[in-house]
Image 1 (cartoon, rainbow, N blue to C red):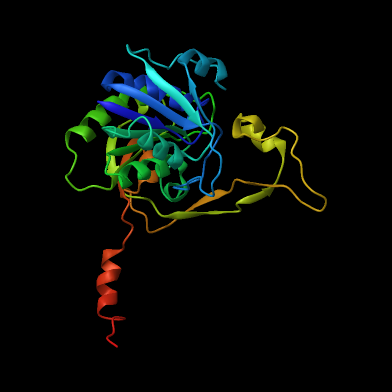
Image 2: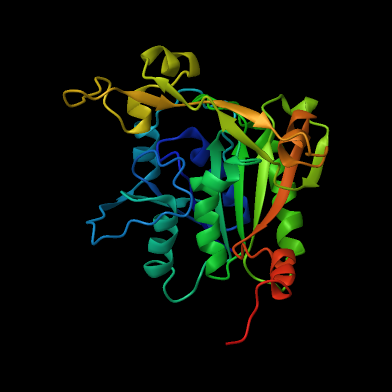
Length: 297
């Protein structure tokens, strides 16, 4: 099996290092990840005739560049992974892979992650992790996004190490003939022995409120994040008259959600698996419109 891996936290993040090791047991791994942090990019691509820097890396170089210190939960499977970075968005990284090393034969699967932070509920609309998976699905490739519900750069990924291989096997062994599907897998940030199981759910509804706060380095410090991890300068610069803000916010749950909403499944101690599709057509609304707005001239 040929596996293409990317993420939106950048090649130096712990999550993608763990994922590349997990996936070695399933076949040949190729990692093409963003050079810098690219969260919230959704399916954006690097257009406009931009010059995109690509660089091949060996695994020792990836280890030296890592922004994390804790390695206890990183497995060690036999095999190697081909690593490189592209100074572009996650979806662009998948495009690049499909147009270079996989030009003649597409990979069997695209796996994006492991994201530092939940991509359940409305977060899935913005997610660069899922945007990369959607790029794979757009090209007819089975694609999976994997996330852990914590922003901690030193996150404990041992639950993903323990349970994702079985989830991956089940997904890949029962793929439908229909194309365009991605699987959004979200892990709660709890110890592996406290996870109750795996449940399929739907994209939960909700929105963020109080999303912009005056920039304060204490916000990053509280999360264990440095500006450098996000590809930013530790001394932010602004022009005269500018005011610096940062985007954080609080999630406001929709009261119409049922317990099968993906973010509520996680809250209940389950790993959530939700199926999304590159086709965003609302077929129920199309049927309604056919009898409402269609006209002949």
